[in-house]
Length: 226
Image 1 (spheres, rainbow, N blue to C red):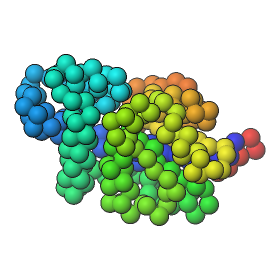
Image 2: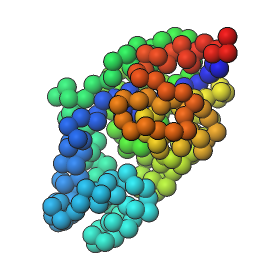
Image 3: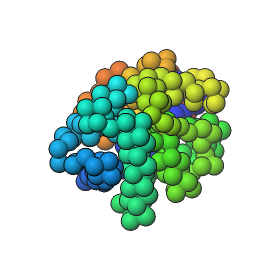
Image 4: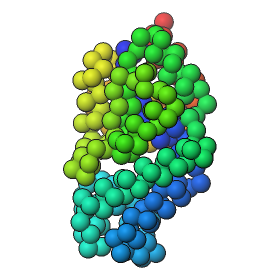
């Protein structure tokens, strides 16, 4: 079928930030922990993922409390440090748009299909990416995690996708993601989804899959029933 609005995930879909085992991200967490007098070596990678918010609101709350940290303060500090780290990686040229990402976005925009970006990254990081690559004019809406309380609504919760739907307005919608949380969020928001494979673990629950973004335009715009 054809779709009237397209919503993209950021990391692993538009932006190749999944480089070098995401060491840039964990270095940023380490800086935040040190600022709060916590030795990073004493916190496991799973623990750092929890503090990042990658495991959701409750996990962040629990791990922060175990470390004797105010969860709101440490998450906000980590969000700031990781966003700063993203900026540094962008300036160094270590982060790039995936091949065809800009072309696909421009192509869909030219076909008058409203576009959005919904990410589990801090919202400041999403804005940075869009502005750095001069893509802002093509997206009608974007959102990331805005604050600690907003972690409750991160994917796979559908709320951020529902916000995008309200802004884009044109049904049917489709969400383009690369992870299980993306596909579940789309299902929870009652929309179709595209799994961008990228060589990752096999995912289930998507409407169709693609190897790269270049395949999306025809799949989205043209009626596949013909």
